[in-house]
Amino acid sequence: MATKPMTKGDIVDHLAKKIGTTKKVANQFLDEFVQLSYKEAKKDFTIPGLGKLTVASRKKRIGRNPATGEKMVIPAKKVVKFKVSKQVQNAVFPVKAVPKKKKK
Image (cartoon, one colour):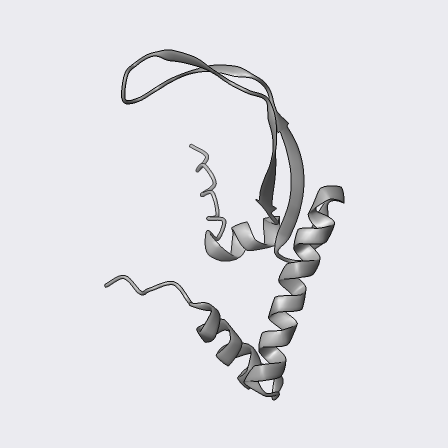
């Protein structure tokens, strides 16, 4: 049975309960944190223990219009990428111990 992802309201509720503050203050914190990440992403924004927002450049490339099949040029552009930290990766997908080979 799959669970639904948390909504902003769920996150605000959780933060308010965990920190012992009001939902209003938790919501203000979350909004300010998001705005700060938008502003700082241009020069890399690291969220300790979570990951890093960076700006990357994509090269110009040839693509195909899926409706017509016609070839087209996709222009170069800058994109925002998020790279998760190793801590997140290991927390979500724990590293399994590799069994040692037995000597004969």
